[in-house]
Image 1: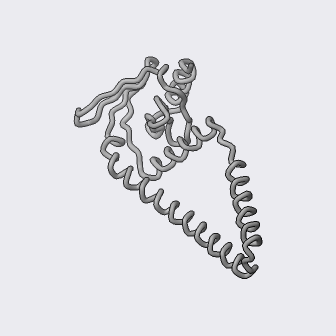
Image 2: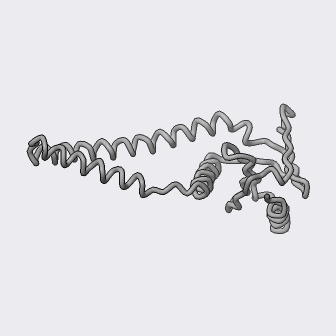
Image 3: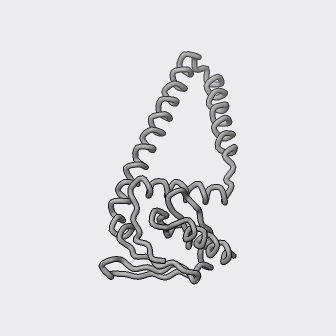
Length: 170
């Protein structure tokens, strides 16, 4: 089957979020370590403030300033990550769109409309895949994905892709 690959910014964003979620679930990093570290740091600051004789009002002001700084840093990081994601999409838009993909029981191959480059993947090298509402994400490694959009595929073609991908997983 032949598919013309297209991806909007919103689809790219969803693919990146799904990729992060997929690999963070696989690594199973415990979040409790960060929480325990923050609690211990707060306890250490409180204890050292009492030991040094700092008044309660100064300690409260310090913690409020720390809280405001933390919230501000969190919001700034959110804004920066969206901005960075938008820039990444704009840089890669030509590579992400306009691919002519051929998908069959042997794997996924493709070329760009202008013929600048081609690629070919057998099903077995994909570490894993995610079945999203608007496309399939296949991962040859943790740093990249091959997206197959579903909008031009009927149900039987989508089912065939699922079967091929699952039957060759290691």
